Structures are given as structure tokens and as C-alpha cells.
Image (cartoon, rainbow, N blue to C red):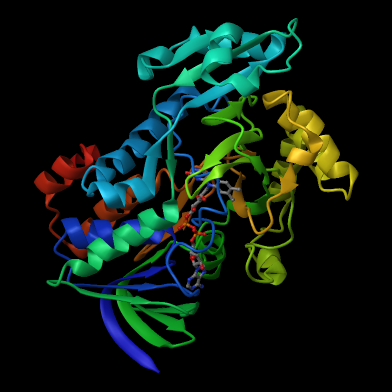
Length: 448
Ligand SMILES: Cc1cc2nc3c(=O)[nH]c(=O)nc-3n(C[C@H](O)[C@H](O)[C@H](O)COP(=O)(O)OP(=O)(O)OC[C@H]3O[C@@H](n4cnc5c(N)ncnc54)[C@H](O)[C@@H]3O)c2cc1C
């Protein structure tokens, strides 16, 4: 059995944990970090390109965000762009690529909705965002208009910040850069599962299937499991998660870029959208759907853990009832449940979702994306009695727990910087602020 002592242990080798490993190694004087991942490689769960929509979310075409949320998401996504500029052309092109991106509005109600967003403060945040009508759409994304009823009202907001990202390659790039730093002891262990944690006098023992490792600070970057560990460690009982699965359908490549659909404000998940695949130029992906799997992740049977990560109290019940009393959320849950039915499900998905984006697509063009999709940990916040949009952090002395629904991959570097600021204060580490800000942009949290 292995043992060892580290300044910091990171549990989870997705984009959240890898980003933190990189940030700590590149910009602080930490002496030793251990990253443990229960699977065989970096970025194989939600971070994998087959699990998510590969979008660098900027908040410009996400009509369910408030303006405040868009501003926050934009600044987080910009960290990824800054990072990509540190890479050579070959590495960068495998990780991140520009592509056209828009939110398409179909019918009077949706067009009114994007027009009202466009005439509000959004252009101050995204001056490059353009409102286009059907004629312009016919030119820039022809298949959104081919075969469409000429009487249908159609418009789109077209972004100048469209990027597709292979977040798994991004994570590997973080780890490769971290381990190149020979002045720090860095250990990355695969097939190593954290089972439990013991604390004694500010010292933590992380007990794994491959040994016990001691540390002064633990960060859980374990997706849905972060919340389960938080509950085990007695931290914050005010949130629960429900698992929201998302699958994809695919066709041959029918669109140039990303086409998002209008989503109602306050609904935490994006409406079904169409995306290119960074690793396969010949397909277009449609999704994700919204389903309710009884587990925390796609690779392991995790039903019991799912039950354990839920709070069974009156506040949670009250919050859930309030959430499902929201008509839009109820409609999404119901229609997506229908999409899951054998035979009719695919047909209704095709009719209601895909043909709204590409009216001329044929039923035979669409097939189920086998092996694609993931499970988002949707946060149920008992304090605000609602579903939260985006990632969440819980803190307990010597520990951070990162829970990361979409757009958690886009915000991973920003989250890592926040964690670094906190950890550096706790462990009395020096931060190379000049280099950090020159590489990744201003970090105002360092002034607090
Ligand atoms: C359908 C779908 C579409 C999405 N689309 C987008 C998108 O377009 N853009 C975007 O920004 N985000 C998107 N997201 C969200 C994004 O994928 C996640 O927020 C992000 O990948 C989270 O990264 P992570 O490292 O926190 O989690 P993960 O990638 O899930 O990594 C967690 C890691 O922790 C490991 N782990 C768990 N428990 C243990 C343990 N006990 N011991 C050791 N290791 C452990 C797991 O094996 C895993 O590798 C999407 C998510 C889904 C499901």
C-alpha cells in the first residue's frame, strides 16, 4: 500500500481538479500536491468530449441567464481563452477551436424574447453580438432556413465568441504542464479511489483503495461526489442534488456552427441545441436531453450513493415542490420523459426539437448518439428554494468541495483560481501574482 504526505490533495481528475493542479503548481510556492483519480485517465467522466456539449459558455446566447450571470460566466470563460494563448498552435487547435455560435428564435414569442434581451444591457457586455433575421440566416447558417415555412417569424443573436473545446484535452494539458515543474513534488495517481477522510488536529488522512495519504488541505473536485463527501464531513446541509442526465442524437454534419435555442429565464438547463464535434468534422450533435437517472454518474452503479447525497428533510421537500410547481420546468421534465420512451420518443424529439433547428432534416438522418452524454449534478438550494444555475462551492476548515453542473467546464480555471486564493491564505503560500495576471488576466480576489 502506498503512503505519503502532501501539502494538498485533490480528489478527482476532471477539468476542475486538473485546473487546480496546474494553477497551484504554476503560480504558488506549494511544495507538494497529490491528485487522485478513480478511473484510468484524466478527464474521462463529465469532462470527456462525448459527455458534454463542448461549448465554451460566455453567457451571450444563454437566454436563461440573468445579465449578472452572463457577466460572471464571460469573465470565467475568458480565463480559458487566456490559457489557450500560452499553448503552441498544434496543441491549441486540438483543445479549442473557433466556431460560429447563435441562439435561434422560432415563432413570435421567441423572437420577442431575444429582441427584448438584445435591447437590454446585453450589448454593453457583448458588443459583438448581432441580431439577424431570416435573410441573413439563410446566408450564414443555410440549413436553419431551408424548407422552413416562409410565414414563420425567425431571428437569431449571433455571437462573435463561439468556441468548441475538448475539455478532456484541456485537462491533460493542465496536468502535463503541472508535472513539468520539477521544483514541486507532484504525484498523479489513477485507479485510486478516495473512500473516506479522517481529520485529527487540522491534519487530514485520505483513505483510498491504494493507501492512506496525509495532507493539510483537501479539495474535492469529484463532480456529484463532492457533495456526498461534504455531507460525510458534516458540511452544509442546505443543498442537495438531483441528477439530470443528458443524452445526444447525431446526424451527418448539417450546420456550420453551434445553434442554441431560446430557453426561459430561471430554467437551469439549456434547451436542446445543435453542435459540431471538435473531434469529428462529419457530424452534428443534438442535445442534451433532460432525464432523471437514479445515480450520480454514468460509469458506475451509484444508486445508493445518490440516495445518500440527498437531504431528507422538510426544507428539501418544500424546495422540490416549489421547483416542480414552475410550469416551464414541469413542461421540460414531462416532454423529456416522453423523449425517453421507446419508438415514439425519438420521433417526438425529431419533430419538436431537431426540426425547429433544421426544418428539412429527415427522420432517417437522425440516430441516437451511443455512448454520448453525461449526468449533471443539479443543485437544489434550500436557502433560495430553487435550482441553482452553475457550479457551487462548499467550505469547511481545510477542505473545499466543488460541485460542478454546466457550465462547470468553462468556469474550471476561474474556479481553480478562487480555490488557489483560499488555499494560499490557509497554508500561507506565496502567489506569483504578476505572472498569474500576465498569463490569465486580473485576479481581484487577491486584494481581499
Ligand atoms: C450533458 C452535459 C453537457 C454539458 N455541456 C457543457 C458545455 O457545453 N460546456 C461546459 O462548460 N460545461 C458543460 N457541462 C458541464 C461540464 O461537463 C462539467 O461541469 C465539468 O466537466 C465538470 O468537471 P469536473 O472535473 O468537476 O467533473 P468530472 O469531469 O465529472 O470529474 C470528476 C472526477 O472525479 C473523479 N472522482 C469522483 N469520485 C472520486 C473518488 N472518490 N476518488 C477519486 N476520484 C473520484 C471522477 O472519476 C471524475 O473523473 C455539461 C455537462 C453535461 C452532463
